[in-house]
Length: 121
Image 1 (spheres, helix red, strand yellow):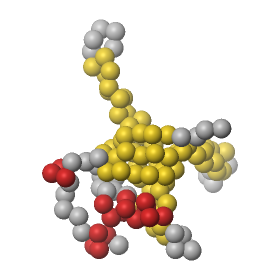
Image 2 (cartoon, helix red, strand yellow):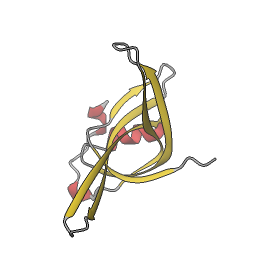
Image 3 (cartoon, rainbow, N blue to C red):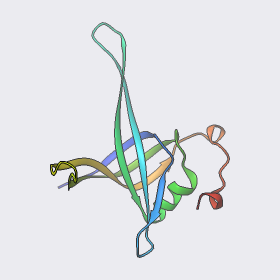
């Protein structure tokens, strides 16, 4: 089986970073994947798909230190289905997300705000 995803997306919020009990970095990214096309009448149509993304290890450290809301990123990863039981309703819930294996910043330098990684920790 093959589970491989390659996307270009915009960050919808600043990366949310934490560490596991054993010290592994984890970063959560909110992504907006935009699509534009023209309908049958030639009118422009835009669609955004919102996806949650988990990043682990050194790649998570990179995201924490060098990415911000609005940045464009190139991500390679895999799909993952999260399932849980809603504590209020008792209903089973699920959400399809992305686990990143590599993340590259595609935002041009001149469009990036100054970064101070030591201040983000």
